[in-house]
Image (cartoon, rainbow, N blue to C red):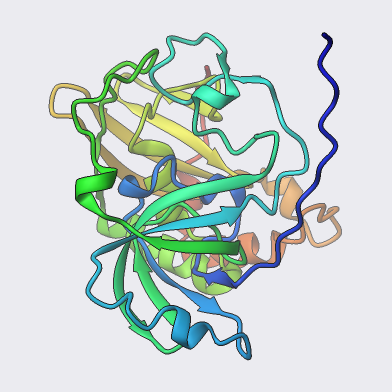
Length: 279
């Protein structure tokens, strides 16, 4: 007897949305536990959700079921960022966001419940993410630390350090453009920082590397033995002629770059000379 296609469909109405500083796909943490961020879930009014979350206070963690609202297709096999030795894995054996149905599941820290606001920490969702449901995390039912993990190899994480120069420049860029380079570094450099297949990387000398974030370049140093990445600096990726007043502004950010070079002239000068090697 042949199989018939199941055409039954379901529709869901979000009960709330995530509010946080991370807006772009590249800012999404690989896993919530690596995020080091905070934000909130704003539940919808006039749906009696105040009563629905009344007894959630006292739970340290919650499961959040949400929609990958920025994804519009799916892939039957994907290459995970870590642990697969470069081979493609069936998507249902991964945490990839490119799923047959764009549904995500994340275990996050619940700081407090304030009416229709759920204050959360360490999550892998982006600003505006539609939330479909919330459930309490129950250690006795949800934690299985000895469970086998199939194809997934042990994952090494790196600690991040930032120089004062980078912090100053990154804060300045965020104020003018809302681009959070510190968040970008947490997402891209904690796991597999030298994965050239997924990141725009350049090697600079013996110890330094560059990673591209939109039209910016971030300089960092690796200490493999210590498991540490030190983020050194950030500079504009535009050539001087590209910042002439009549130059095309494809991404609408050249005013920020011109002002940045005026504010930090030493940083702009640091990119002159031999270009780093792309890997």
